[in-house]
Image (cartoon, rainbow, N blue to C red; front, side, top):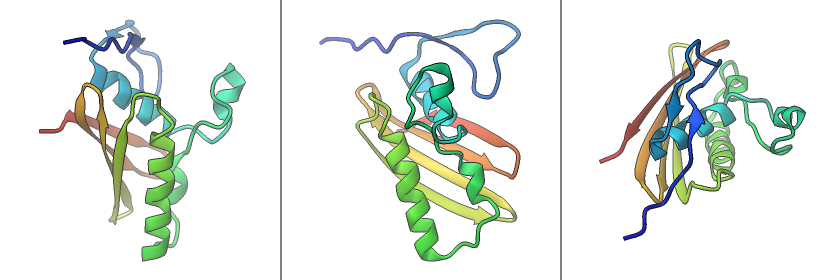
Length: 134
């Protein structure tokens, strides 16, 4: 059985750590890429010669007026952004608003298996939880 090598990256979600940590776990690598993608304004990656169409800052949704149509559109936009990652084969997105916090759960499948990424989004912060799905 062939093993897919996903590469390695420096572990960072919102800032570079004081000590560089090499991350090689495929779920963590993909999850961190998705988390960064969902915290970056569209087009901002072009400034570092990266994907000029990448990025969707989910913090923009926190204070929006939520209707069922808005929620469905938001979930589609987040899903489309996640599918831009070359390793993500499929994904589903569920968004919930509760007490001023937007919780976005992205369940995605890559060649290495299913994973779940949860973002707790507030006006200024995005907390990330990544787990391998059963």
